[in-house]
Image (cartoon, rainbow over all chains, first blue to last red; front, side, top):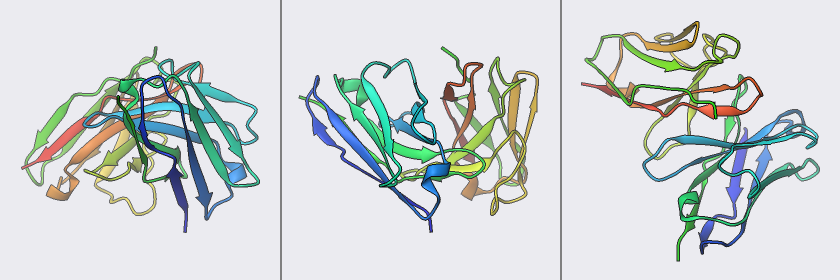
Length: 115
Length: 107
């Protein structure tokens, strides 16, 4: 059975940093691009970033470019999202996912940016 | 930046066909995917590559794409189909994007 389990969310002050992790199991992790998607309370889904199979290619939405960094460790079947210079508007549930014909999603982790 | 445009809401009676559209300039060249999200749950894929159904998705869900508009159709809509629906695709440079979402009401 496939599992994507996000962790690392919590309360952080504006301007602070946080690193999210997503541990994968039940599928061949190193054959899939991995993505991060977020959803602010009561709002829609927003794609944030993706990373290629070997980590050599990364892409970001304009809203997080320069502040967020995606990475992966295929030996640990884990993808990360390092978030810095956090803003109140970054408050959201953060999902890791591998969207596509073979479609995997985690249950999300809540990040709250507030003073 | 690239945008996919969906109507904020669609309402149908049970048994009718619900149609949700998604407009985007790159859709003639890029596939559309459709996700269903029920309250408090992660999104679930209902259509991929414009018109293909994943295993386990009922036949009443179908997708099509023509020009710059992709459409999700739910024939014989049921109360259980009430959810938010999102289209998903990429722009010409490979950046991915979701539409703003459509709240489907079946009553």
